[in-house]
Image (cartoon, rainbow, N blue to C red; front, side, top):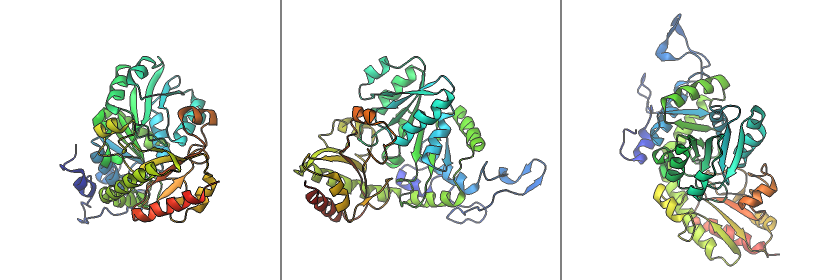
Length: 386
């Protein structure tokens, strides 16, 4: 529970954001691997070894827990390290359900890593909650959901899916990377655990790689704390400091991001060379009403497909402002080709089955002047004609 009424204030003042020793308004970067002990079993304020705990990282972890309304937060070296650690809550013989389009790295982690210890997975459609609940396998123990999902921006009713999953005893894990706690708070919608690639919007400047997890029960807190220390994929103190700094400006950045994305989505929708736009902020999007009921707005990410008389290779090579690159969530606009980049680890037949076509383009809208972004996209689309 946040100590502040409004999240815009909590972003800046939430968690342990000042130094108790000196009163510094920014938490110092504690660059130490170990801490002096005054005697056997006498640790100063509980600190002993930096993998187990670091004051800078602890400040970040308390901040993300407050922002998400969770019991405790945990910081990791990457988003996949966060998800991978959470998967250690499950055991051999357990099945994890995946919503029908998720980040390719999450799929790879389950398909090629967790499978070696006997954890299986199934890809499920979460758009029809009643059908989903009726089809839950007996060995399912958890579900990983993204809403809006990567890369088709498919919306899942998080309240309904969480309730259905809980009736069958499943742990609900929501990857909230695209929305951040500023736009959507899955724990308040019924989820059990929320995870982030904090590399993206939370950090916001394409200058670090980080992951976060927030839990809602004491049992989860104790277990993830043990796993974080035992596995050791923790976030370094300097990166923790940078992430705290990034979060302070999350609100103003996201407002600009969303304004730009909304205008670009409307422009793309009216472009004669654009076949389809995927963006839950559009009233024509099938997930619009559901997304509006659980999120502040349609978010920042969007995807689109060009008409058949366009060559996407020419489109990508013709861009001058928007950068072709992996990742998303920075202040600069980034574009990618999911089929060959972010989702290449998913077999093509599965990609096509869930709707990730070879012509799909994903756009992470930056905070540049929106007219400049549109002009660059328009020029690239015009030059892509076959």
